[in-house]
Amino acid sequence: DDEDELERLKAAMNDDTGELEASEEELLEELQTDCAVRVQKQARALKARRQVRNMIKTTFAKEYDAENDRMVYRNKVTGLVQRTKPRLLRDEDLPDPVVYVAPDDYNVEPADRKQFALVLTTTSFNDEERLPALPDVVENDHDAIRRHLVNPYVCKFLEEDCL
Image (cartoon, rainbow, N blue to C red):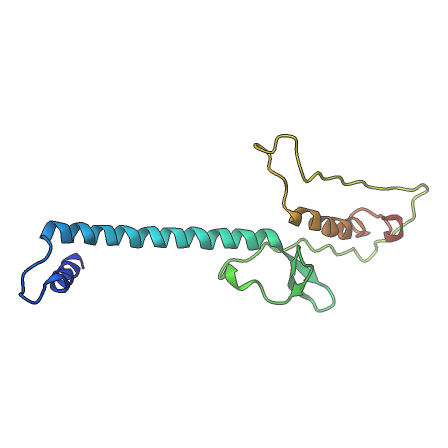
């Protein structure tokens, strides 16, 4: 409590003669400053933790591993896959991906003509003050789009028809 802290500061500021080196107002001001600094440190730490979690959420994707029948976490920048969620997410988690399962009677029929899809993305814009350049992570998302487009249950494109 503040009174105990004030007494501790008073005791610490007495010299050998037992006289107070600072007035009570100065001690109170020092105590208030110390408390304000502590609150500011905690606020900065909280903000930093939130920023790290947001960075993790944009860097990792939660995916379904059909071979092992479980969710895994893929780093979009490095491509590495891990079984456990990133530790700094703590009790939060990434959203579960949509898992496509074909109906039992589903049959892929080849189209009578070539079909294709084109996905374009720009990583920089003319007005970089209002629209900053996109991070490298965006380019790595194209791999995920490509895997999605070749899923025959989604768009019926055959993998050999994709570039």
